Image (cartoon, rainbow, N blue to C red; front, top):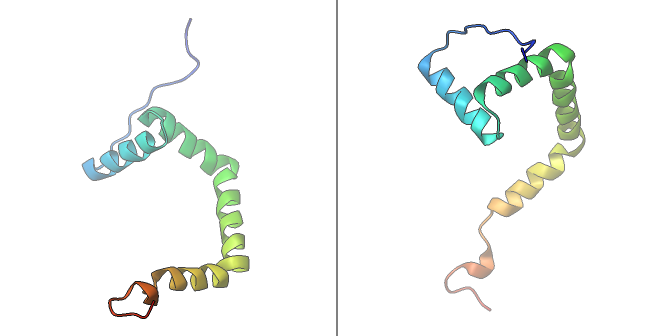
Length: 85
């Protein structure tokens, strides 16, 4: 059985290749499938749609998320030494 896929060569800087392989592994993909998926997402508009959805979420809920982040980052006064119980 022959594959309809075609082989190509891509020259990448070593750090870019390493980052790509790490990203592929984090997604449970081999490097070739990862690159293929990136190209498909970029050329079909799927990536742009995802980025637009993320921006819309930030536009609508960003202030709430910023406030929540500040609350979570603030020191908890109940945990401070010498604080009244």
